[in-house]
Length: 294
Image 1 (tube, rainbow, N blue to C red):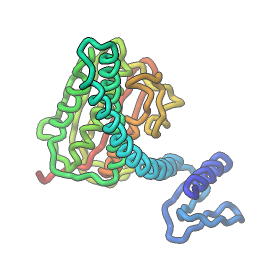
Image 2 (image 1 turned 180 degrees about the vertical axis):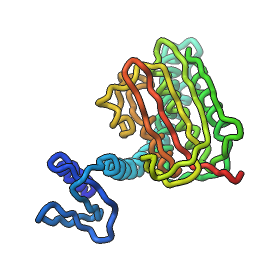
Image 3 (image 1 turned 30 degrees about the vertical axis):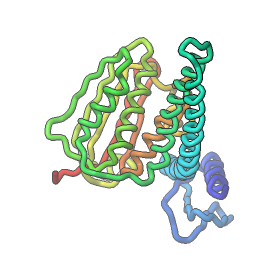
């Protein structure tokens, strides 16, 4: 509750005076003119403008708290669904193949199987704070994740991978889930079909490039679709948990896919950004720390 109070307080002060976060201080003080407020998070702000950095810290707190909650819910939910599935199979044993209830029970099993996708995303979301990294071939992970996500979609894909691409030290399961989620997002944005273009390049970043990343070597991975685009007013919210512009349905409306990507990338010391215009498609740009020495 204290964190949320601090975030709301700082947001309200932005609107009044356009202030800037300078950093985290060991002395927990927030100054506002002549007034002084004690603040457990130690956020020190001055009259300037750098809202993006403050939004990053707010989002990080939100994701960390939700991650702990999501992990516990996912595991408990899986355990309960396993019990339900067991009882359904026991009921099926006593039913003849022609029994009217048999198809209904099989339909229930199919629905339970679909919940595994949701709990898988929740678990990935919660585990984003502890990636088990190993040296990996990123283009290979991309191809596998994208192929799986597009297996029943009328979407073309164009891979454009730079030769001699650097390796990266990642949690392969988490990163694959991230690529899968972005591809699924592209599929849903192109209901009439289209093309997804995926590229990877080696890049060296420095502090002058305006990204919240350390200087060094990175893989720049781009997913560009030809979909309906994202409204401008929604661009700043697409990585928030449970935010979605999609209709509710059996596979849509959950709003966790891009939040999972954001969480996973940040815990890998990477970053993700989005560019979009309605009617002209959406481009997600991912940065992963790379190993030039391998």
